[in-house]
Amino acid sequence: MSDEQPADSRTAGRGEAGPATAGGRPRRAVRRLGPLARATARQLGRAARSRPTRRAGTALAVVAVSLAGIAIGILLGARTEVDVGPFRAEMAVTPAVDGGTTVAIPPLGALHLDSHEGPVQLSIRLGSLDQGRTLALLDDPAAITRASQTVVSDVTEGVLRLGIRTLAVAVLATLILAALVFRDTRRVAWSGTLALLVTGGSVGVAALTLRPEAIEEPRYEGLLVNAPAVVGDVQQIASNYNRYAEQLQHIVTNVSRIYTTVSTLPVYEAAEGTTRVLHVSDMHLNPTGWSMIRTVVEQFNIDVVIDTGDITDWGSEPEANFVASIGLLEVPYVFIRGNHDSVRTQEAVAGQPNAIVLDNEITEVAGLRIAGIGDPRFTPDKQTSPADGGLSKPAAEQVIGVGEQLAATIRAAEEPVDIALVHDPVSAGPLSGVTPLVLAGHTHNREVRRLAEVPGEQSTLLMVEGSTGGAGLRGLEGEEPTPLAMSVLYFDAEDQLQAHDDIRVGGTGQAQVTLERHVIAAPVDPVDPSATPTAADPAGTDPAAPGAGPASPVPGPPAPSPS
Image (cartoon, rainbow, N blue to C red; front, top):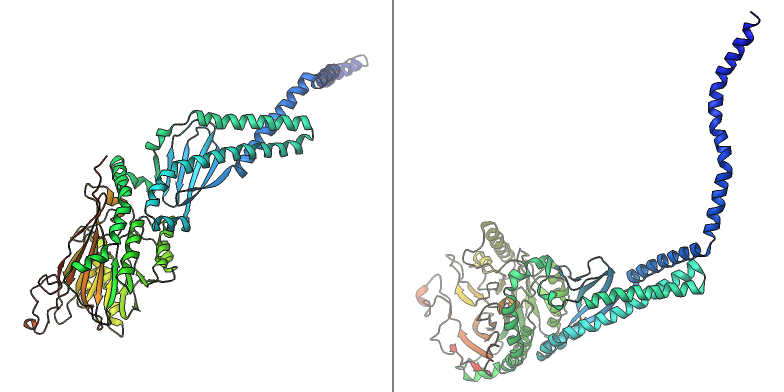
């Protein structure tokens, strides 16, 4: 037994030692690999310390620092401001894969041009209108032509200046970053040189791949998506606009002769105490309208100007600068918002020193009590809707509703109102019998008529003005552009409308001014119609009355033939 026990113990010992032996093999393997690992590490260390490896590492570091410096410089300083016509534009360069140009017109949207290839993208952001240059354009219509001719040179100058600035800021930022990282003059110099080559090469690729024809194929975003539909055929608009620009000086020259046409009219003797009101509407950003307004205000001794809306086209912030000309008129300017005018536009008008904005309110100006309310819609991307049932039922109810609101405000007033202002003639219906006169715009067509009478109430005359801005750019779409229109209204000492002069200036390619005098007939007496001698005149004007009738048009220089 004693002989077996040691045997069992040895067997057990061998059995127990098995795992330990197995577990010890890796440790022995590691001990064997130790010298190999140490040798490998020593070889790698020697390789890392070799000249080629150090050079490669330095080159990679220089490239990385250069690219980082270029990106930082471009993002922080590759931008400049340039005057493009009356606009103050900001130009910037940003890294991009596909290149191209983006023109941002906030808040209307943007258009994108596939103008060039390369790793840089040009961004142009149109800012606000410069008041000084805008007023210069308004005072000198010929300056509009000069400004349109200098736009290309303005943009070219801005791009060149931006390219030089981009190179400068990219290299400067790289030098500063390299100095902070390397603290070695040679490496800093190499980083700056590489930045110059990379940035210059990128700008050069963009210049070599430039596609000027890309401007004819823009891609729109935002509200500008509607621009092609609103503007119409581009070539036709461009052709008409060229004709328009050529005739601006002739038109304004004829406007200055408006007053001389009065001598050809049958004499209308305005009694002492007569108040003269100039009614304008639907300017739609046409600067020529301001030239006409200033001329008429001065030559007709206007006491107050009334604007029934749509002074702008899109109601955008840059457009708000267009209203700065109001302050130059030096007479009160009463305004209501149209469907193309935003709240921002209304605030800009209210900011003018001589402006009075009405929104379901009543004011007294030049002895006249005037009530007005803004259009309930803001639809700059919609075509003008006619007043003869062209509105949808919800829109009609909305437009008629503001007329009802204004009628309630007038009825609640302690004193009667002489004139009510609405933008859309559809709003005028509820005002029948509430006030003797309603002024409107919106349709771009002049119209004078009596509203349906309310039994026992006074008769109400509706006067719809044409477009003082010739419908803006929309007026250039057709073969016969929309004329520029406004009216001078004469009120007697009792604040009753006695007569009105309708002034019309030919549109694109037409240099002709027409002034037509109308004397208002007395309204029908609701109690005794036979007491009113002109009761048969449905429009409220009596062509046979003394002093009525159109003036002969004042011809201007002949319009040039279309090119």
